[in-house]
Length: 245
Image (cartoon, rainbow, N blue to C red):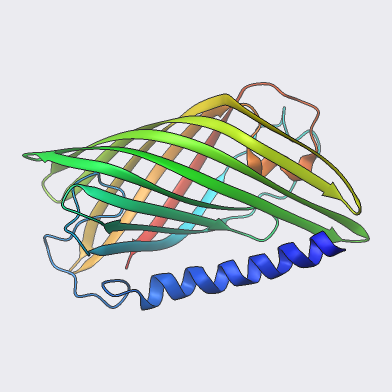
């Protein structure tokens, strides 16, 4: 019960923080956009003090070999942001939220452009957590992960096309069943992912992003509620779409 209350309070605080961060940060939602806008995923440098964000949804397909018995797969709220610390150094964050399973990530990176081609190198840490308190069932879970990445992008007419690769590392994970718990702290390489995305101005000063992410790894955080005994490598496709604020 103590863990349950603690995680619920944390979830409420995180939701409040995320929306406050995206809405009230200078240069955020109400910033004036122009045709030279720096995008959220495209790896070009960000001028110092500039902030860019997006709001959308993402859906991950979990293979049947992991989810042996049907687990409802819900679209997740997908918040992304980048902030320029200098002309080449930036910090980035992402929040995927759906209560049952959630993940917050924060990291830093370096970006540089060569004409219409851009490159970034970054490293992010993520905290994931989930709640299952329904029909007399009481379980929560949490974990820490790390994913260094390299992204390359090219501008073709009005399209900003990005291709990125990530290495995935699990640092720790814990699951609580009422007053009992199981967990481990054991950093290990668990997989890799490739993401392809397109960002474009669909109409005047309205920017959208579309993308596909393919993760090949051991079971990912979104499968914790299945309590699967399978510890096999599998492919996890993800589709995401967002509106750049």
